[in-house]
Length: 158
Image (tube, rainbow, N blue to C red; front, top):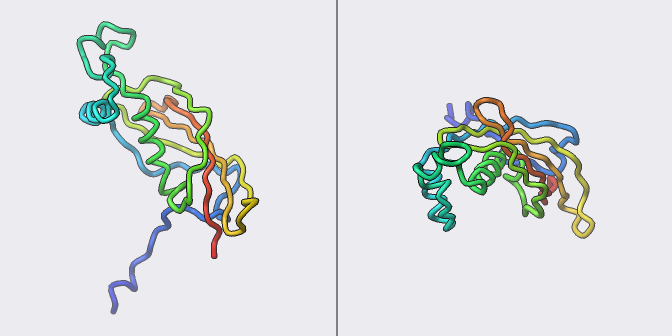
């Protein structure tokens, strides 16, 4: 017996035809944000605001703890959605209406869900289409922390 006989493959990303308008996808990935993640991202992106990297400073401010950099939250959530939304993408065409809904703190865990808002075939190439989605990220307390919409160019099945 060949070992491949008992194996199944999982789909990474979707083709244009696989997206159903109105469908909501609960993404399987999640990520706890550690202090090292926030520090590295702050250094990498040159965001040295003390509310992200100085505990003494942050403790004297509104939330009394370090805040995770908002663009790190956004980047992680986009990444969480890749297997279900843009895994087969030709390109992400547009991000819109990025909203930070609740602060994210060190040791928060991010989860996400995405709703398929619309889709249309490409006007210039028949082998692809554009899918419009909205993603909501939430933490371990089920508080929505981020939302954004995007348009993704994805291939059709061949």
